Image 1 (cartoon, rainbow, N blue to C red):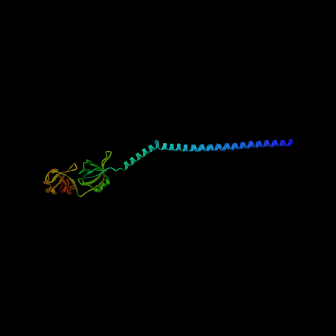
Image 2 (image 1 turned 180 degrees about the vertical axis):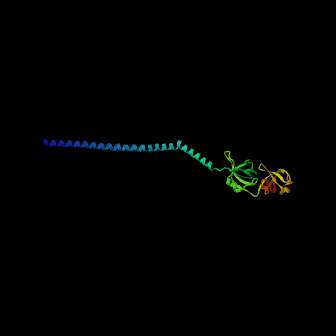
Image 3 (image 1 turned 30 degrees about the vertical axis):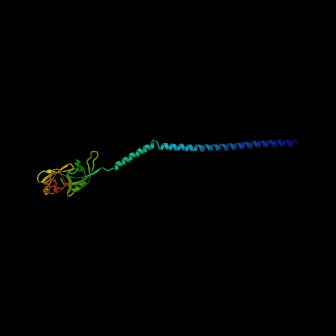
Length: 230
């Protein structure tokens, strides 16, 4: 009977030990699971906050100093490009060729404009191309000058004759009369139309057609027709 009691005690102690071990193992497993679950929840909670902070940081960067500087640089670049693309104003006028000022410019006495320009930039090849004679009437297009430079001729023609509107100022003698074209006083030879001019009053509005003097280009241009404007 003592032997059976001893065996029974051993079994009870063994069962107790096994139960304690299982309890410890279960506690460890449960603790690990709980800690993992809590860490996952913390990570999920902190992730939106981190995303929001990152979004705020990006928003702050996008509205900060660097983009403003970039926009300012873009505005300056656009303004510079606009200035480069903007072409100078071009004007058209008639004048009398006076001669070469130097290798790259000529002198022209304008006939029908308020501009007082006299020296114009002109390519040497074009000077030779047109074979201009002093006193010859020319039609020219030129760019408005900048930075103290002379106006640049962009196009030039040598017309057979031109027609301008202006005022009859008066007779110089039986062969010459003075006219006013856009603030420019011009004396023209009127021999061919003297019968139309002899009765005109001073400051009469007229339309005058004239050409380079065929006998001497350097002499006064010759009127070929004149009309009274009402």
